[in-house]
Image 1: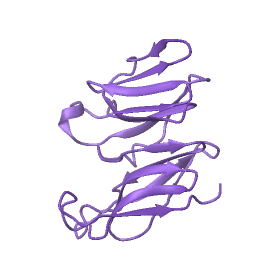
Image 2: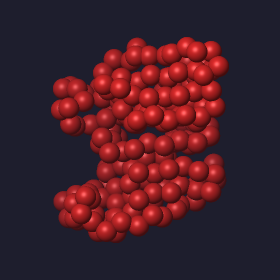
Image 3: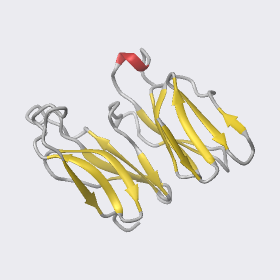
Image 4: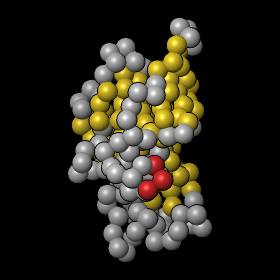
Length: 174
């Protein structure tokens, strides 16, 4: 995955995160232990899925965390917690003060593919649930107009064969 914003290009290759500064011609990475995928940037921060806290590596499946790195302060932040890890399909996206991702923590036996959108605000350092509908909210894209996402109304079925709709959710005020 590759993303570009401001002076930064971020990408993952062989499960390692890299960031390239277009103005300086310098590359950051791969200094992070473990595996990283799904990198996104807004030119100020980069966010990604990270497997460093779970044994077995990228191909073993299991849980992932979401991390963020601020280019100016060089500070790394773990967004998810050990109590709220995410799956490989969390697909985080970001813009300005927020990171949004698809999260299966509210899935049930009756709705095994259920996903809600959650967001993290840099300004508060807290997570909050963004969607509450049945079905599955997947692959969010954060824009100034809101969060666009792929919604599967019936999360009981396999996401690969289910009906889909593109929806938008306004971001709540901070």
